[in-house]
Length: 68
Image: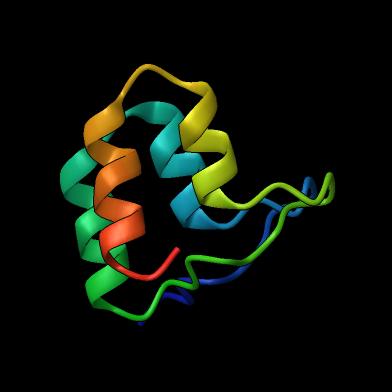
């Protein structure tokens, strides 16, 4: 299967990329399959940090509820 924590050149995991694209169902899928909620990109940003800058409080709440 796919590596759910594999980083791209910017150090972004699939979870970060998926959040940026706004795909809530894929975020849930990645977390159910072991994505690391606290993995940082090359700038030291976690998925929660990136999500908190956006306008989707639902995802922020979901990440916190799942250990971010």
